[in-house]
Image (cartoon, rainbow, N blue to C red; front, top):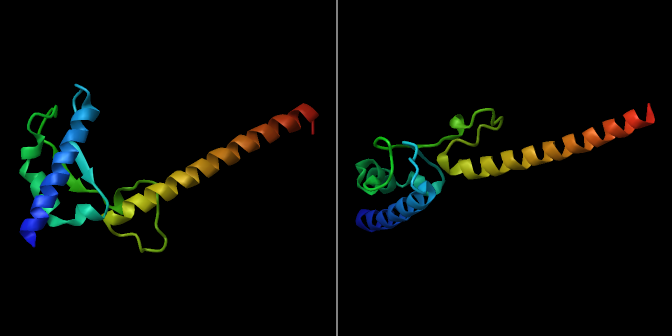
Amino acid sequence: MAEVMRADSEVLIRGLALCLDELARGERLPSAIYLCGGGSLLPEVLDELNRGFWAEGLPFGRAPEVRLLTPEDMLGLKDSTGLLTSPRDIGPIALANHALRLDADRKEAVNGVMRRVLRSMKV
């Protein structure tokens, strides 16, 4: 089973390297690589990334350091339930955070319009 997972992880990592190469567009890539999501918990993925062969030819200033992104790394967010504990929870956390920010921005825009209306009415 481990051999099958290793083969799949190699395919995943080759895809990551292609995406990073495209993303770089000739510029240097940051050396910190953070993994999240359920697939990041597969030990074969982290093992292969830590070997470093995949980074050869990519424009890193120094050898990339790979680590898992955890909910504790999400600054400014607090999970009052204590249920979000894994890298697999990062996606839902990020989506919820984005939705909350969009809602807050929308409310702020409406409040700004209301303030201007009230000022123009001199209320």
